Image 1 (cartoon, rainbow, N blue to C red):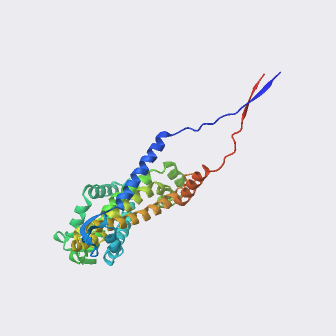
Image 2 (image 1 turned 45 degrees about the vertical axis):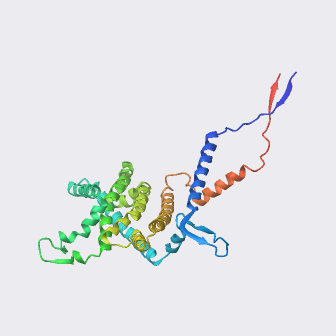
Image 3 (image 1 turned 135 degrees about the vertical axis):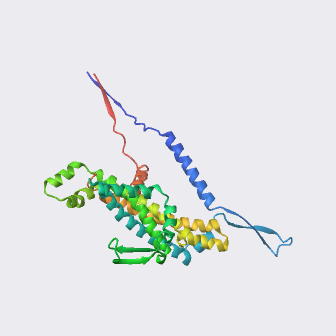
Length: 337
């Protein structure tokens, strides 16, 4: 004879105590940061009530970080003009750097020493000297070469001829940044090119593809997945490196902020203004980098990474699911004979 006893199975979730402790500490730190950002301090001046019998005076309170000053200058003509120059310098310097970097990378991978050796020397020189020094050298290049010409070597036939003194400071700065970036982009491109398996090249050669066709249709599409992330970092770095152009008299974003602060002595407030614009542009570039990485990862990942909007929706659904009523856990029956 057999009897059946119903024994409910009690499911106890694993408790992550340290996770909650870390979350509490994080919330505390964030609240402290928000508090100090929105706090007010005495300005050193006083507001007195003339109707008070004892002429009571209270100190005027101002924002610690001077948000009123920041808001006043945030969209001023000077700041927006400097922002425009910063964006132009970043775009043009990166175009020069990317094109030059791809060319140098292909030369580095060549088996011909006449091509690979100068490419290695170029990378060695421009990565080995500070970009700030290179900007100053190009700004004073007229001390070494007063004229530049392009034509037949060792002859008087010139196709292009111009004076070094005719170059504007912005042109010189973009050229210096672009040439320096070319050295770093060449290493990034080379790392992406050598990441492609050699079997891909052999397969392309076996079906009659030329080296140029193999590079364009086989190697580069696969190498882009490796090239895009560090290239995005270089673009963001270039955006901030343009602040060095203020050393040669270019009024870019930081230079505009410094010029304004030199007249009103609101140094920290203008630095915060410039920093906010840098953060906004960096955020936009980071979003663009994410979608580029997502696009070139189609052939390598089974599932695409979630976009920020999809991730937010998933987080909201996860939080809401914890408050929904779950069905009872099915009971197990222990059968004894």
